[in-house]
Length: 177
Image (tube, rainbow, N blue to C red; front, side, top):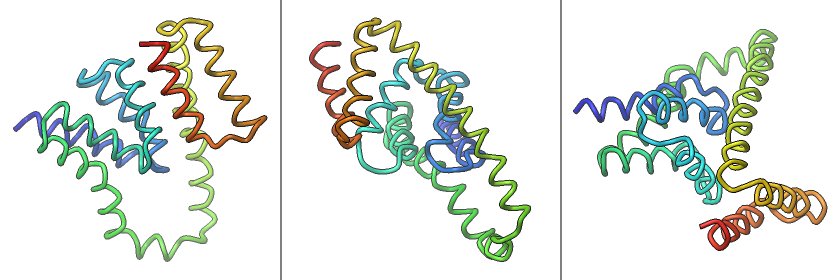
């Protein structure tokens, strides 16, 4: 029973403090499942993040469902998914009237503007860690090739990012496994 409580907390806490949706809560989920509970290694989390980004839908719920299932089976998956959506659900029910009343307040707009740099720093640290993990695990040439090819495909030839991610997955399955 304690395991399911830990699963709930591991996803509820990032949901509460992860202002800005899934991308802002990913570094917080990483801290919980990798550093705090040790359910995944940093490399496993990176692979899960890459796979989750390749699939349609919200990233946080996909990661919660998978990690919850791996750690605690079907009920663990349910607990992780519920914990991921519960903060938003509670906020919508309890704070919707208050938020609607003050939506045009300069103080609320200023608060929102101050939170954005924090989210950017968290995502930057996560990208930095994954880049150097990739650099060490896949090798210098592989990392430069995939990064350069992705940049060219998206910026030069305007290929949709979904196809670039799919191509990187296929490349990785063929050449890096």
